[in-house]
Length: 280
Image (cartoon, rainbow, N blue to C red; front, top):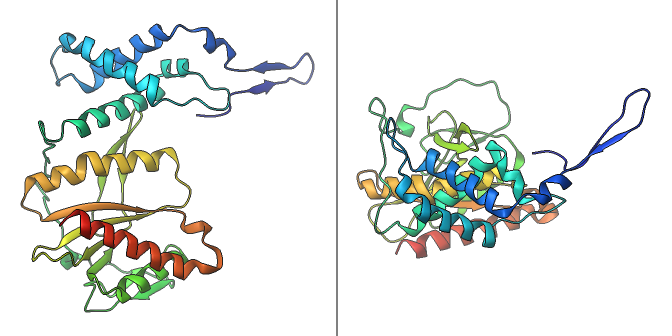
């Protein structure tokens, strides 16, 4: 959100330091009530309907547990900053994701399909490009003849994917139209995963493994991961008509140094192995 301490200084006059110290005096019960109310009104209210006030007590207990066990304040920050709407909305997203995850068996997530374009395919990918940084794919593993590279690690990823014995097929998510909507605070955003890999996990119905490669994980990367694991993947799998899906995140690619190729290969093998074992 920005610095916790700033200094304002004019051309003349005394400097003034602005900090968040005043927020340390806010009562925890005030923060708890505010976050619970925001959670109730934004996450547990049907469109056009009154808020379900009978849920306030249950949500308050859950919110208190989240504030006590999950919220970590560093660098001069305070829980009272959750009084700001954007931060409160981010907290509500985290709390709702936890509730959804804990009730996956009792109230499974259901996918809502686009009525005009419910499914996509690499069969329909066709575009022109002047980009010279690209990888020519193996036609036995990828329907698209070129991967447009955004960085060097993508070329290394393609090399490792094509050499891995467990990979049936793969594709980079470029002009596929594969987009995941997610909410970051009060904003609706769109997430474009990096790759889709089909590993051989012993089933006739192939597993679709969505692979995301991340270096530095900002806050939005954590929200994307939560969205995939708590909503998108369970929703599509529960639908039952679009195969089996899973999500894996590949981290620290920008800290690999000289052993970049070996690290990519080792991490790729670990992710494929984990995805295969989880789906058996």
